[in-house]
Image 1 (cartoon, protein in one colour):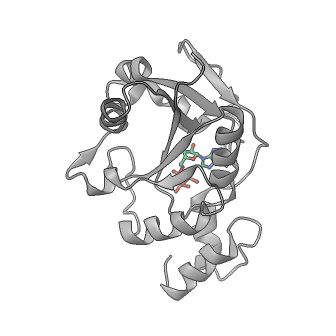
Image 2 (cartoon, rainbow, N blue to C red; image 1 turned 30 degrees about the vertical axis):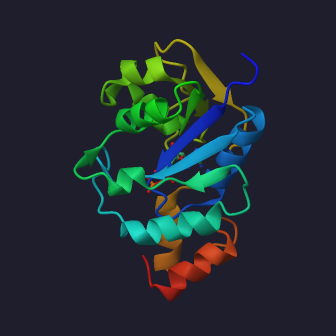
Image 3 (tube, rainbow, N blue to C red; image 1 turned 120 degrees about the vertical axis):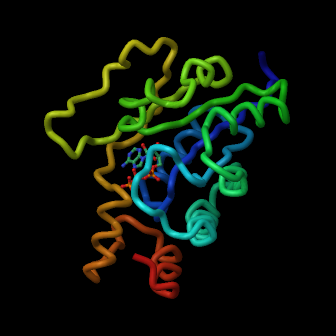
Length: 196
Ligand code: ATP
């Protein structure tokens, strides 16, 4: 199988993109020897109830946040797609564009926990190798995700980082420092555009 292109997909609201997103992306590129990592900001994600910041702001912040990772680029297809957007559609498009590539889908543990509620999740597993990054639980009862019944899931090794975009938005709203969570360029962008 040597020589096959290895393409990763990492989706999220990125509202805003924080240190754990970057750590996950870098670990994905390194551990899975990716030729390219598509960072895919969500459009109208079916599973998020909160109103997201405008897509152009989330794209701009992602461009700043992942700029130093040569293999990563911001893929805006889900934002450009009208209507509800599904990960499966993105993977099917990539499969058509790159029929020979090995596709990897990277998600955090919280997403893994509800993966079996995703639109046509079995079809996702047919197209892409699922890779799960551990994420420290904010709820002490949630415990560790034990793979559910999912077969053939790989793990991404990365340090457990206790950060969420929700917490970062709260810090910003309260005028607190985000030095531990955000790249300074991202914080500057947020302040300039008065987000959150
Ligand atoms: P919010 O708090 O607004 O729900 P979030 O911090 O979970 O946001 P998303 O943009 O929703 O960020 O996440 C994108 C992807 O990154 C998801 O697969 C999520 O599981 C993963 N992720 C986010 N934070 C972490 C973290 N601290 N550790 C590991 N994975 C994470």
